[in-house]
Length: 338
Ligand SMILES: CC(C)(COP(=O)(O)OP(=O)(O)OC[C@H]1O[C@@H](n2cnc3c(N)ncnc32)[C@H](O)[C@@H]1OP(=O)(O)O)[C@@H](O)C(=O)NCCC(=O)NCCS
Image (cartoon, rainbow, N blue to C red):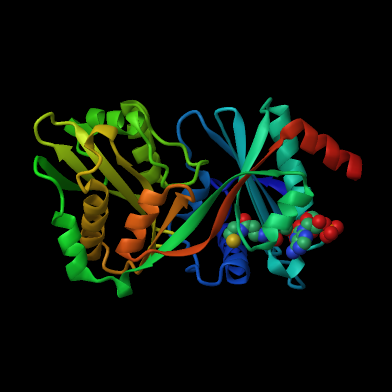
């Protein structure tokens, strides 16, 4: 049975069942990734930025012989933001290739269409069945990034400590657990607005103005995701010359996510990129002692950043692709095929 599902009011058993399916999917498709935990999973699935909406559906198996509710074996949600709907679909490996994935996409797409949105975007992990799935539905590839993973157990810490201090005169680094200090929010937002060396997924919105930045930090906290920031401040002007952001999610706290890394144009060539990333890893080592890995996403053309990441010890893992489709075309095509 497929039905709309609200994670805010769902029973704990249902949230746990979604987690079981997610972990079965990870074990099948990304066996090197750590399994997710239940901590703040409900909040992760329900909290959104102001002005955004997430709508979810689940596919639940028939009741078992004891009459208790069957497990949730499929899940789809769409996040409505700006003019697109960002889709995520999961089908338990035991019941794949039965048409459930296609049915879930059609449900979500119909809603996105009714709500007046033009297109649907989705992040698709390379070398998994999802590539053939979305291509069979007519999605086209817009963008490819490489995910790289750093094993903190293999890091050369003394070398890293040197990198963290190898910064030009006139700058100092600041570690900010939780987010940038209030007196630097405006300068921080200016740095993000001026330039953005894409170091994360394109579908992840960046925050360019102070209010949006505050909202974004607040949303991260509500979703159980703890942000850490290292920024480089230009001493003469007080401006934020560079910043790097890492988030430790309660759902998989042994593997953190690298978000934006930015060095403002005027401040390039002073070793800021390398120094802020090295300092971040040093700080995380004491702030998050259970952390074992950090993952990052880079545009393949971003050679400078890939080089610094390789020096830090990041190893390319797999392709991470962004696909999109025109909603009206998708709905008409899928309806016609039924
Ligand atoms: C992608 C996914 C949703 C597909 O679900 P599904 O229920 O198996 O898909 P469907 O049965 O509706 O397949 C529809 C079509 O997609 C294509 N397709 C799906 N899986 C495929 C595969 N493994 N190989 C080739 N084509 C495939 C086929 O054309 C299929 O039609 P057909 O079976 O009539 O030939 C499922 O594999 C999944 O959950 N993957 C994980 C997705 C994800 O988000 N992962 C992130 C963490 S790893």
